[in-house]
Image (cartoon, rainbow over all chains, first blue to last red; front, side):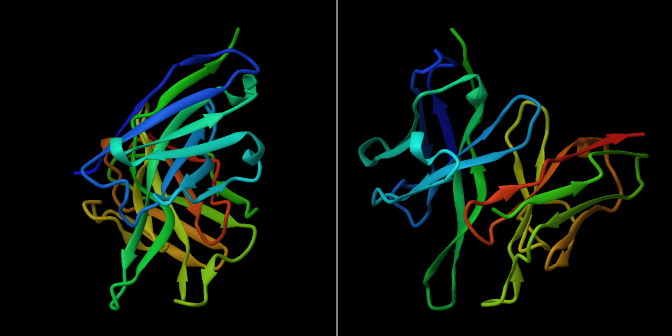
Length: 128
Length: 113
C-alpha cells in the first residue's frame, strides 16, 4: 500500500520560506509516477502547486512558479517543497500527492495529472 | 487556465435519496486523442485529504462503491450518488486534467436532510 508521510514546521514567519518533506513508502520515488504538492487555504478549495519527476524535472503552477522549488532525494525516497517570500495568503493545509497513470497495451506509461494517493496534510500558518 | 464551476455550493439530501452535483468547465476537456474526458471527482471528509472517486469522467476508482457514478462530456459533467448513505457526507470536488495547470471546482458540500 502506497503511503505518503509529510513533515515540516507548521508556523512560518512572513517573508520567510516554507519547507515541507514527503516521505514515500510502498512505492519507489524513481517509479514512473510524478509527485505533486497541492494546497488548500482554510475553508477554501484546492490549488495545485507543482510536480516533480525522479529525474529532477519539474512543472510548476505559473501562479506560484517564481517562489516554488521542488526537489527529490532518491536515497531517502522522499521529495520536498520550498515556497519563498510567504505571506498570510500562503496559510493553508499543504498536501503531497502521487500523480496517477497507466500502462497501455504496448507497456508505455502515460501519466495522468490527477492524484491517487495523498499525504495526511500539514497546516502551515504564516504569522509573526 | 481552465475554470471549473460546480453547482450547487451545498445540498441536503435524505438518506437513501439521490444526490446530484454538477461541474462545468470553461472549455472542453475532451481529449480527442483517446475520446475521453479528462475530468475527475474527489471526496473530502473533514480533516482528511481528498479521495479519488472517478476519473475519465465516468470510471470509478478501485474500491469506490457503485452508488457513485459520473457522466457528461465536453464541458458539462455530473456526479451522482444514487442512494445517499451517512458516510457520504463530505465535500466533493471536480478537477480537470486536460491541460496544465490542473484546476479544481470550488467544491460542493453534501449533507443529510
